[in-house]
Length: 214
Image 1 (cartoon, one colour):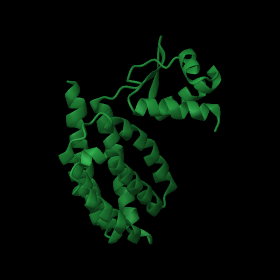
Image 2 (cartoon, rainbow, N blue to C red):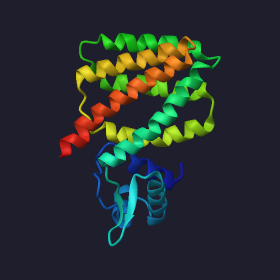
Image 3 (cartoon, rainbow, N blue to C red):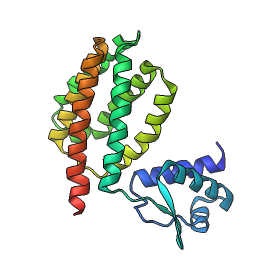
């Protein structure tokens, strides 16, 4: 892996995990010393972060970590709805849709965990598997590329939301419904289940992130 790729991955992870907060200045000299590389790979990595929307150039300060606002959240979900609903519908029409049944069963089982919040990482791995399987089944590289970029921002926003046990269980049920609809080849039900999940997800994240900042 090139030095600039390593720097990019390190800075992106720090931004997504909120170790680097909005407004933090990403100075080339400071980051090169912190990461043990020259300024050139740092400069290249910062340019990629700006292109991703995770950082912005700011006059007099250089490059800073981008803010997360209510408008930002709403814009993310407008795009998310367009992409994920289309992908779910396409996945349900795939010849490989039967493989979603076992994943749906995994989500069904997760609903009954005594402490789903304690198994948060395992649950999010299930969600990541569903995302990957939908991308593969939809078989549209342009959709998949757009979703991969979008998910970086969604991971960042998700870290702000509280892991409410009731919401996690509801989310597991919603993901199970999506997976079952795809497995059964019902494109419109898959799209509807995705719509319901995204609406509830947006409402929850908005309540526990932007709302808590006011």
